[in-house]
Length: 90
Image 1 (tube, helix red, strand yellow):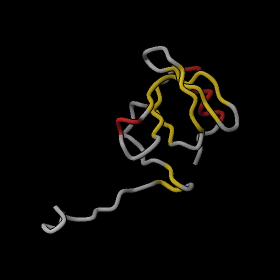
Image 2 (image 1 turned 60 degrees about the horizontal axis):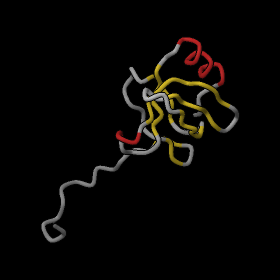
Image 3 (image 1 turned 90 degrees about the vertical axis):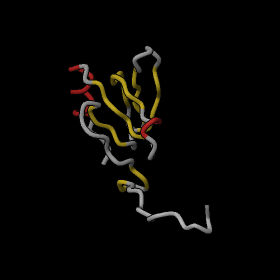
């Protein structure tokens, strides 16, 4: 489910801002422009001009699209709905 080299090249050439989803918390997403990549990693330039090195196995897509589910063990990770909390456990 990793993004292809051709897609990364398109993001880089067109200057498309991407979102890298690393875990279930949206605050931990990395947003920026693709700078470079190899077989295992990619470099993202954030708006503050710092560069972040990330694994290509993370969910990567345009920042303008809805957030994707993070990838865990090669599969999209979905949180379970565990229902309402028990009174005894509060």
